[in-house]
Image 1 (cartoon, rainbow, N blue to C red):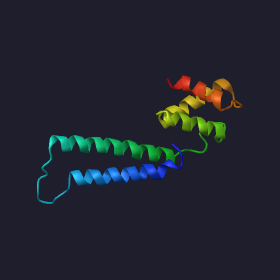
Image 2 (cartoon, helix red, strand yellow):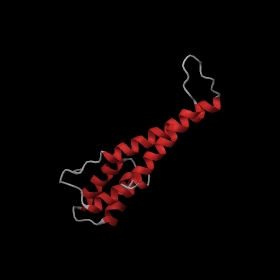
Image 3 (cartoon, helix red, strand yellow):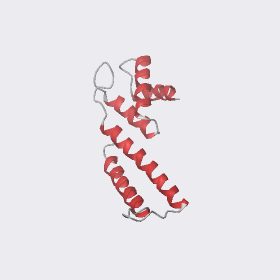
Image 4 (cartoon, rainbow, N blue to C red):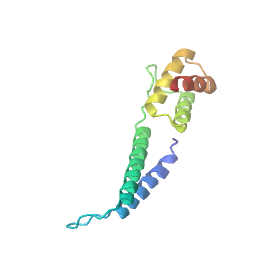
Length: 122
């Protein structure tokens, strides 16, 4: 995920939250009358909201010093973003990057580092 994606993700979280609130309005004193279809939609929305929130929090909480030997180089950040864009979780991407960097050394460029990290993700 890129920095520019965060406002879009937050807007989607807000939109989904509003949609979920519209499906199941909370009324005091009245038992909710929800159909099975309503419950399924709410469950899907909550799952999507949880995934989006987790993704945003994970991205915002990125450590600057990921690897033991110091801050990330620009190509390492690009490898993490590329793996993330392919659906890899932050933890798995970091682990794959560490292994790839250990195998190739500190001076590896983006492409060899990315290809090697992909092997470790699988």
